[in-house]
Image (tube, rainbow, N blue to C red; front, side, top):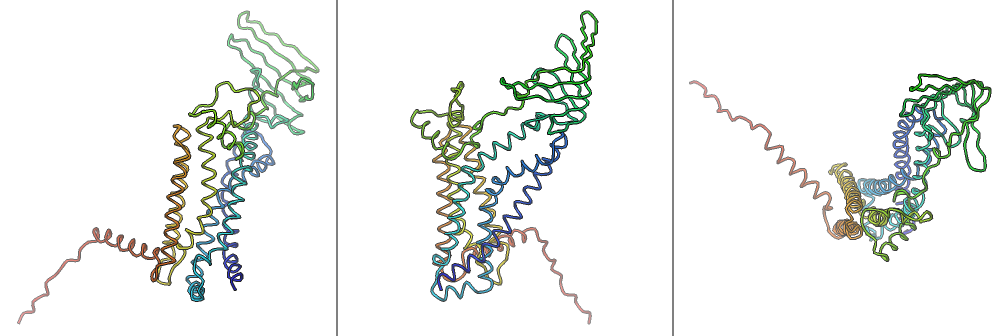
Length: 423
């Protein structure tokens, strides 16, 4: 019977979690898709690149939606069980909330491990890949080619634009390049067709132009010169433009293991503060390039965020218990308010510690401790106290408080004397 109850509770929770994860992922991805399409269209980028970037965002959005899906899944399941009196029947069999919620806690443990993998390893890599593609898009170069219809500034000072781009951006048509130096000297290239050439031993990228001309104008001599050519090899050094920085320029791009190594090394060597090493060695690991305060804040923040998922079923169960006369939204609204406030406190504390050098560990774990004590106390009182659950008591007090506030501004009814009937 006990295992059947565990399976029954999971059957109530899992569909809700799946629906919420799907809805949250679609809403978040669609919102970002609109912005990415604007960027892609403005830079002549294929829509396949946009979907590639959306794929890199999936771990981030799942990490955001996983805690709220778990919380709502448990809360709505308990609300359904209590509204249909199934929870009372379970309690009458001698099964308390501590035992009944065990399967939800096991589910929370599994989801905590998944979330720890997402925030600890998947998100740092996909975040870096997303930024690399965004860099290539805004640079006008998508790794191996040139986008069409955009003005791209090259490392050699030229502004380049092509009318058409084919073959993954390597076959160009209607090429125009222009450069004006500080002295006023102007150089212009035009060509009917061009081709990107790569693969040389030194990594140089060249643009081979066909059927064009090269024009120069000297402001000092007021002389212009034009050279026509059938083929012209023009070194561009596009590799410098295309190459994105290495992973680790941001603490959010570091894995949990790298953060642990960096945090431990900073403690051993006594490094602290909000500034990174000015001239790190060329082969320095990424965790040594980030400021010590940022490493500590990110490390403790990820651990606290992941461990907090274990408390979500404990918080959601008391908030989901209701009666037929109670409001169906008070527990839900209160729970969401608690979760959002707790998340913002962790977010603000981590940002404050990273920017000021304050001790991130004690501050974040103190917030986690307060959240833990409050959650466990609410669960304990709900299970041990007979009669009306504490959440419903809070709801009644809240309604009474609102009635008093509204009563202050409610117009008083005028008292009229009864009319005297003439004899």
